Image 1 (spheres, helix red, strand yellow):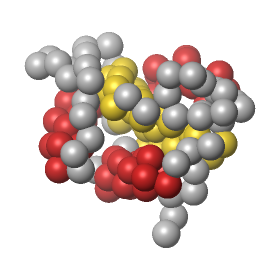
Image 2: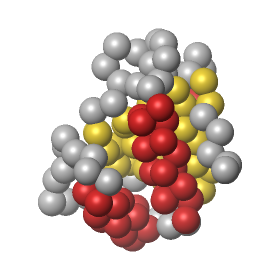
Image 3: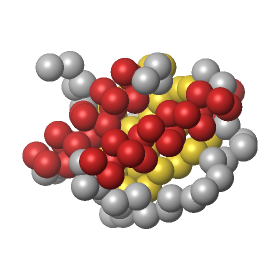
Image 4: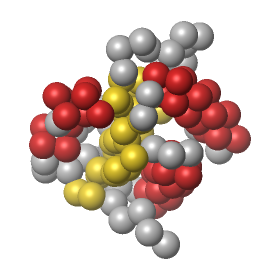
Length: 118
């Protein structure tokens, strides 16, 4: 079961992404089906420029929340999918094409959606 702090962090991150024009943002509690993470956040970005911008803004937001990014790199991925590993929370920012191709929500269908509304 997802602990309260991780749930609050995931909701805050997902809302941040949505506020920065991330599309169809979802958060999934995968804690019951995964041994190496507790939550996935998945969102679609509109372009490579959007992906770079939202990723850089998100890194600052995560730092402000005292959430460590394990895989922070200087260069944002050029393939349309940026994975941001925060240990228990994995953030997937994806182009529409990548999201449609990999269908992470279907792959992780046993994950429980986390309500993002207040």
